Structures are given as C-alpha cells and as structure tokens.
Image (cartoon, rainbow, N blue to C red):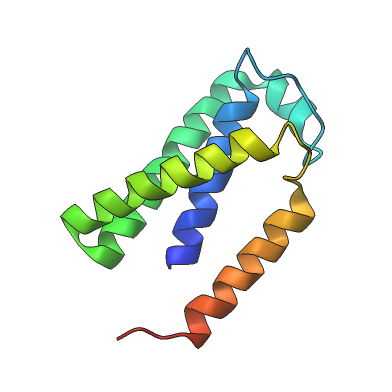
Length: 112
C-alpha cells in the first residue's frame, strides 16, 4: 500500500512537471508529446492522483502521520524528479526497477 502511494505521487508529480511551461520537453517515458497536447487534463489527473495517494497514506498511517508522510513523499520524490529528468536518469526502466524493489521490500520485510 505504501509502494502504491509512492508510485502515485511519482506519476502525479511527473504529470504536473511535464505540463509546466518552464520544462524543456524531453521524451523520457514516451508519452510526453501526448501530455503536452492535453495540459488541462493532465493537471486535473495529477491532482486526482495526489488526492488518492494522500488518502491511501492517511489510511495506512492515520491522519497526522499520514499527512506528514504524504508531504515527505511529495517533497522527496518531487525533488528527485526535478533533479533526474534533465540528466535523463529518470526513465521507465529505473521507475520499474524502483517500484519492484519497493514491492519486494514492502512484502518481505513486515513491520508489525
């Protein structure tokens, strides 16, 4: 559940970052030309994904800790996206590997 919340934050922030006027359009995931054609829809979708992620995090950790964790996720992965996209280190392979590692860690290491 935590991995899904983090993945939603990453996707939502990347959608919103891609539709920014200041971002130089780079073909990182292959869907950027489509995203640039539908900027309003992408922004609405990113807000919906961020809301779902916040609700999932609150559901897992409780109200205060969930909101705090969501803000930490948003700041951390937002900063990573802003740093890694211009360096072309953020692509579908690295995102898939990161998600797989998080799923494995989440299900193997159970914290009661």
